Length: 299
Image 1 (cartoon, rainbow, N blue to C red):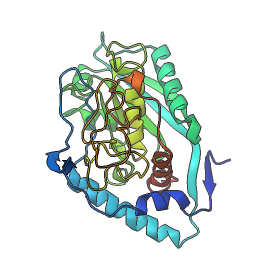
Image 2: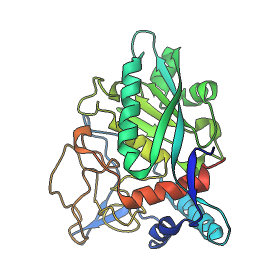
Image 3: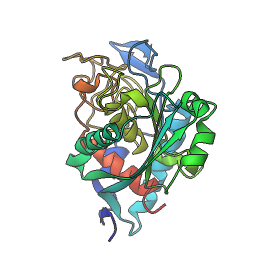
């Protein structure tokens, strides 16, 4: 039996949610009629995601996605709307630090499943492997990423590889996007700071939602503050525009006052504390469905 649920809706809502935006991306945001740069800023002690959001790469990826969706509208292709994603968990340590417990891994899986249950996606832990390699442990965000992933990666495009290690530069985690799989299949997956898992020491980012956030990228989502107050934003119509990352849990914040809605600080794709995050939107689910169908299903 196929583990994914498919519908002959040819992307239905997902296609509509995407096509309400024009293709393109601007690095300049506008707030109260003033131009401001809306790029993530590294602030010591704050959440920092290392996922690549280069504007030119985003523009190219969204153009490709738009063209693929239009092609599929005229074919009998099916839209994957839910399913079970197999997970291969790779624990990388330096021998004394980073060898996280099975309990922390199981708790991380529970967090992922709880975050995505409403939308029909679940994650099945297939295997856990453990590697003691100080070079990989400290170089997993940079010089050692390729060697680590080439040695450990398992499965295909619709399987999730999670690596825990010690990313440099204050990074809590990073992920690859679905559209990147074809060009670099062995790099596909999610990398997490080992202490960001539930029960780890990276408070207030130690409840597992760094994992949820990075898996959101792996499923095709951008940050809620992508592009700031102008342009296409995160390419999702029901997440309010947000000028820049939100930290902590700033209730009632409205950084794009010329656009409807308060900042989506409770969304998993912002930068707020784990305790503040608890939801994806319907539009994000539609985008995840169509991204998974386009780039991961049966690849």
